[in-house]
Image (cartoon, rainbow, N blue to C red; front, side, top):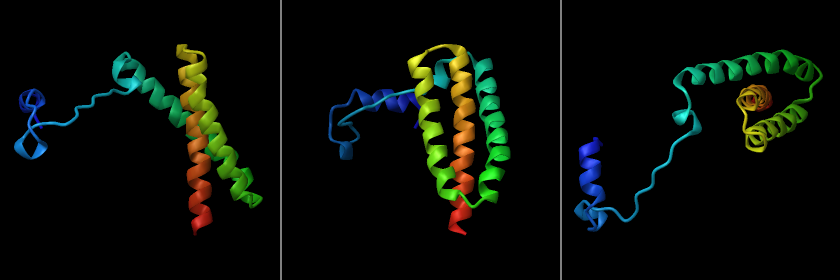
Length: 116
């Protein structure tokens, strides 16, 4: 939907079937309000975390510890997501995305290996 249509429909209080709205929600992701240059560095931190996670995951998969990898990866994702909220600094954002890359790799690879 284009912006002009959205603005016109938002002010209309009719039923949705008549072209109005009951509710109108907006939100944005933190990356949308950051410096555009920084988004590339956050993506790189996730990618490096994925590489580190893949290298260390080889040890767990070799030993058949798939459930440990899934549980550990989930805990790493949770801790990495919590980190920037506790210490709102730029460096903790990078460390958080790095940790999410590690945890996501653990969970995805171990779960797909377990499913096969």
